[in-house]
Length: 163
Picture 1: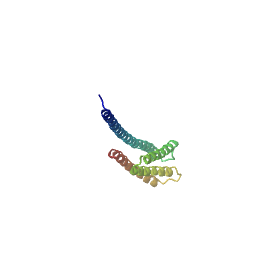
Picture 2 (picture 1 turned 60 degrees about the vertical axis):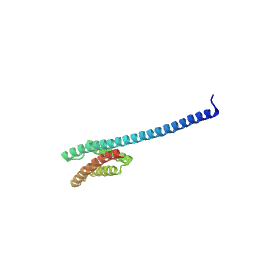
Picture 3 (picture 1 turned 90 degrees about the horizontal axis):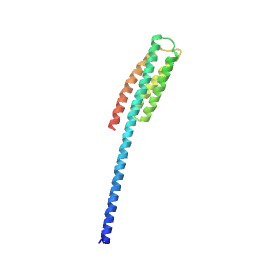
Picture 4 (picture 1 turned 120 degrees about the horizontal axis):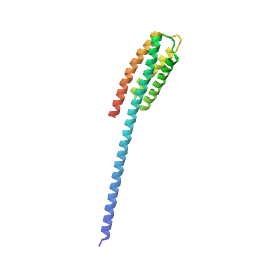
């Protein structure tokens, strides 16, 4: 026959087992949840880097097509060329915003620099009194800035894996 001591002993063992099980479940669930959140953050940052690269590549393509066409004709900008440059300006601004959201300062700075040069190019090329030397300097500056952007995109992507 079970004594009061046996009943209390069994109750304590069951209670302690449940307490240990509950604490362990909470700890494992919390750790798993934190891991999932970190994994999602990494995927989000990788996606942002890819999107920034894609947007800037598209902007560069539009800009190159407009500049190439303009350089070959040496006449006033056509509406398509002007629209291509405006779209490039807008896309570089969008990429700049995404770089700011991402929080990787060197990438933001390089995209900002590139964006400013693209905007300056648009302002200069849309003037009636265009200075060809200044336009050429801006094209060279854009190409240099683009190289820095590509390098910072690579660095940003690598930094995600090291974090």
